[in-house]
Amino acid sequence: MSDPELTRDTIEDYFAAGAEVAFPIGTSRGATLEIDPNRQQLRLICPATGAEPDVTRYERIGVERINIIGHGGDWYRLTIDARDMHYEAYGLIVSIVDQLDGGVSFQMAVNESLEGLRELLSGRRRLTAEKEAGLIGELLVLEHLLLNADEDTAITSWLGPLAEEHDFGLEHFEAEVKTTRSEARVHVIGSETQLQPSLERPLFLISIQITLAGDSSAAFTLPDAIGRIRTRLDLGRRAFDRALLSAGWTDDAADLYTDRFELRSTPRAYAVENDFPAITSTMLDAVVPQRSLVGGVSYRIDVSHLKWSTAPAPLGDLCERNETK
Image 1 (cartoon, rainbow, N blue to C red):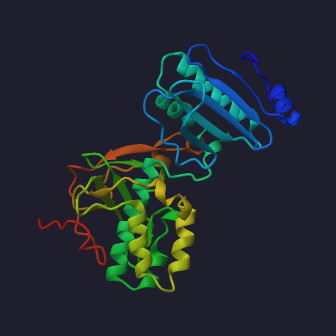
Image 2: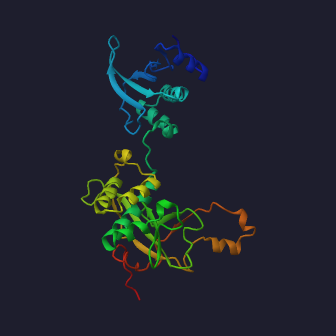
Image 3: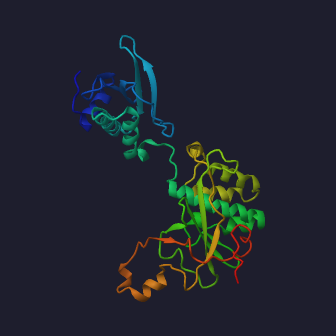
């Protein structure tokens, strides 16, 4: 068969027919599209030039290098489990072939095309880099609390995954944990309430900097941090696991988190008081006309050169002390 222009209806017709078909696709790489209704698969066969893409994070897609008798050289076979997404799987293959025809390598064509269908094809979804860093920061604080307070206090104080205003609520203060991978202490504040102190307790911003660590002896991954905490828990293990799930973590995706981190610097605590540069609900209420029409406040703050505080117990030993009078 020649390279057809397939619509959603014609794709469904091929799968309904029940017979495997194959035909050329694209213009320049000798690629072939195979439709296999019995296995509910779509397959792309193309010459194996360049590096093989890494698709291990996707449960519904695989790539292998094969040799086809009568056709010289090696070939790549990309297989998509197309159950309940026949046309979407076809769209992915068309995207890859279009890029191949444009001169892009197979590896890059697959990687770029998968970006647009990541949520659809990934049975195991990982956190974004920003959320991964944020969870690591909160876990570092939680781990310190487990070393310096009882288990129940540590676990119940962790409010971040519950979408509360602040990440930790302790007896005498609250803490908002912000983690960055940048060289400066630049943090994203995602709402007008994140740095709004409560009436009952003072609020501290805990600034944590992490960096990629390679083979450093101090390096750890997100699964490492979770594993360390689990080994310290007894009755709080179930509550901890529920909180992780709320934060977007799933154990079956643990192997997707391969980046190894270490602290770039000692964490610092900043007292969020009247002179702290925060955009809060109270401030907006006072200065913004028709305040009820303004929402979705998000901003960046650089605390690198602000005066920091000695964190109150039980976080005193986690953060850098300020010895100035």
